[in-house]
Image (cartoon, rainbow, N blue to C red):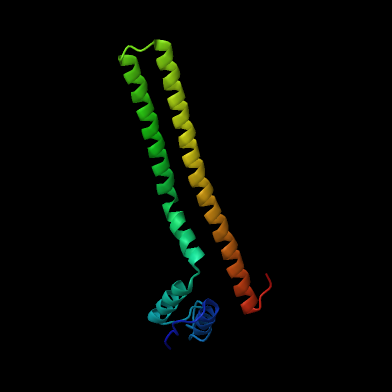
Length: 151
């Protein structure tokens, strides 16, 4: 039995359930025999019908570490530039107190920027995780409803 493409997610799940339910059982162990290609076709079709928010959330989940690492790297670079600026000011024989105050302001500003970048990246990732969770719960409720199960 082939998998009908361009059908909705619940219909695909119903078809997959029917294929599993009607599969011949092995005499021992409660196992069934289902054609591998048939199940793989179902999975491909289901992936094709996944809502964009689920796909986007999966992408964000995979990229979260990269986003945070990039933010930290950028923050480290800003701090390093601030330190370089402070050293340059001291080497140029500027007034010591003025150089210390300037360097402190630059470092504090860099730390604030780093904290803002990190906070923004974490907030963005959390928002996407929340949307993914809501969408997943909604899909689970729809599946249960379609299957006639209690929530």
